[in-house]
Every structure is written in structure tokens, then in C-alpha cells.
Image (cartoon, rainbow, N blue to C red; front, top):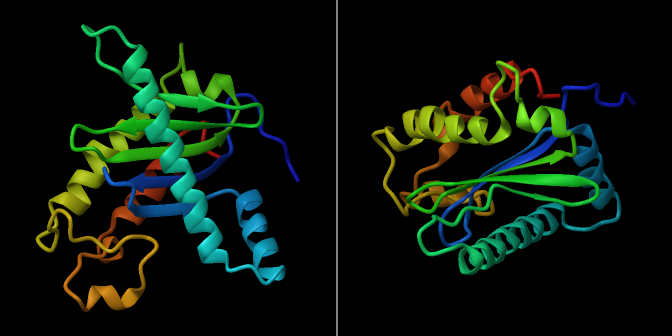
Amino acid sequence: RTTPTLGSMVVHSLNIFDRRGKTLFTKTYSSQAAQQGQQLVAQNTSDEDVLAEQRKLVFGMLFSLRELVGSLTPEEEPAALHSVRTGASTIHNYETASGLRFSMYTNNDAHASTSKGSDAPSIRDALRHIYTEIWVETVVRSPLYRPGEMVSADEARADVAAGKFDIRSTNFEKKLDAFLQSMPWFR
């Protein structure tokens, strides 16, 4: 097992939520997170149920903290929640005007997340790029896309037949992976 070098960061996962907390997309990147999922399966725990519950808790935490930040922010300034840092990890958050929330769960590497004095974009800039350049281009501009009619990451494949838009029918994930792997802080 290798440890992250200065300037690299372990990205554990990326989640995209709609304004109501429905998980539109989720992807696990780190081997550590994948091993935890395998341990759940070995314990005869429903992997998907546990992961779905974790995503609901993440959204609930982000929603509650955003409300708290909004109540503490002066009225003339916009309220924003950019990241939540714990002793072990950080959740970076980017919220769009339409209420979509892009959250990236990483380890705590301060050098990689700020990118001051570097040509590499910060995590916040990367999340903004994922929304404006990848999500909008591949999902929103898809001729099959209809707002509010997307298959969530927690729903079964059978819902596609019910006329819902499936993000897996786009090249969003391929472009997302290529973008993240091009970042010097990604590992």
C-alpha cells in the first residue's frame, strides 16, 4: 500500500445529488473504499442498501450545514458551503443554481485542494468544471434528457423502460474519468 505524495490526493468517491437528495450519479475511485464495500458483502450486508444509506447521510449533512451557513452569513453575502473537513477526510461541495450538488470525498491533503501557486485547478474549480463542461455537455444537452425524469443511482435498471433517462446512456462517466485522471492531484 502506498501513501499519497505531496500534491496528490486520494479521491474516494464522487456523488451528484438533485435538490431533493436523490443520488443521480455515484462512483467510487479509491481501493480503500472498494475494500470497505467488499467487507460489507463478506458480512452478508446488502452492499447497495448500506451505500445508499451512506449517500443519504452525506446529502443530509451537506443540506443541514448549508442551512446553518445560510443562517450565519450576513444578508448581503451569498451563503456557500465549499467543504467539510474532519480528522480523516474532506467532503468538497459545489452547488449549482438549479440545486444540483456535486460532492467529492477525499483524504486531507491541503496542498492538493488549494492549488495556490499551481497551474492545477483546485477541487472546487474541478467540481465547477465537471458541472459546466461535462455534466451540461453530456447529460443536459442529451436529446433524451428531461429534468426530473432521471434514473437515480439507487433505482433498478427496470426504470429505464419506464421512460426515465439513464445517465449511463451518455459518455458522462468516460469524460469524468478522463478529466479527473488528468488532474495532478488525483490518485
